[in-house]
Image 1: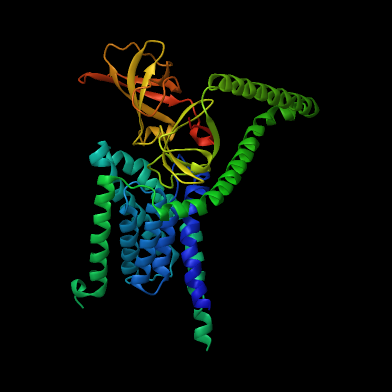
Image 2: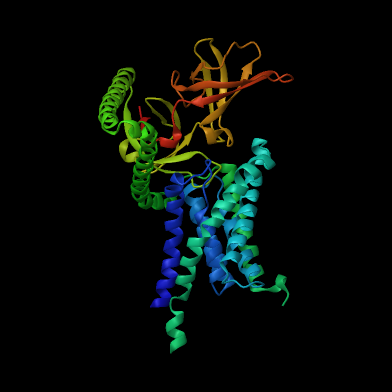
Length: 171
Length: 273
């Protein structure tokens, strides 16, 4: 039952973070930049889960929800979040995953990669936008802001990942 | 184990091919409101509206606290006197604001009496840093249709791009994909107001294709020209905040400071007929 609750809570949190992203995050903007709570959650979840397919599946689901509710071209966030979750899981195999600073650094890098690809795919060809101007003015500050939120989100994911484990280990 | 023969690689390859196919299709033919999107928005809009309302209330509260700090110096000099004056000023401010608001509302109603309008509230905003789209808490149940124009008594907000029974999405004039035919009433010069991701951070949009012969100046009001199939003529967009002469091109460029404050936007009006 506790294992089921763990998966259920993780799934509900995807929706909760997506709702907070379009409401709460509007009020905590700094210089008009907001963090990406969904991405932070996906990376935390990848680092605290035990299966790469599971992590990738959650990335896929979170991106799909984002694309369905707010996407302009279907599938961009779906693919990006799925690959970033898989990358975070794979990279996490080579370091001590339970260290929060690892999670913060992964998020910083992950957010820069995700937003850079999103910007390149959506704006460079169609809107003749300047990449480097947006990189320093929007992408990097947003990634840093997102990484700062991991101090809360990662601990939450860590607590959820322990659900069901304590009982099974004590039996 | 060879990664290219692993189960993970096969799954990733299949998923990627399927999603890329959908991506191409949605880019080519548009990505309409499907039943899943509609269902999700029906469920989430009331929750978003509640959280958005609470957030606006809290941010207004802190803004109020910030403003009260400016009276501190005077407070030290004459506590009692200033307290009395503060109360008086607050009362006058409240009355003045109320008077201005009612006057604007009266003018607005008078001006728009021939149009069928629906009042709505902003329930959510675009979740990323790139787009300036908002979601309202009214939809087809209130008579709202795709391409309906949205504005406030201050000026133009945007137009409806997607609509469900209890929600609709609005592409604002600040959005990178927004394009509005505009005119400067003082000089009669026409141009196109377009969204810009960088300018949007200051509630500004760019004004492109201004003729080299145009006589626009900083401070000029800019309104919708009525050209195109969506926006009617005469809705205020904002004021010109800067002009950039292009030495080599055929046109000049300018920047418009929108008359609507998108950061504190909550109540809007949709023209439904």
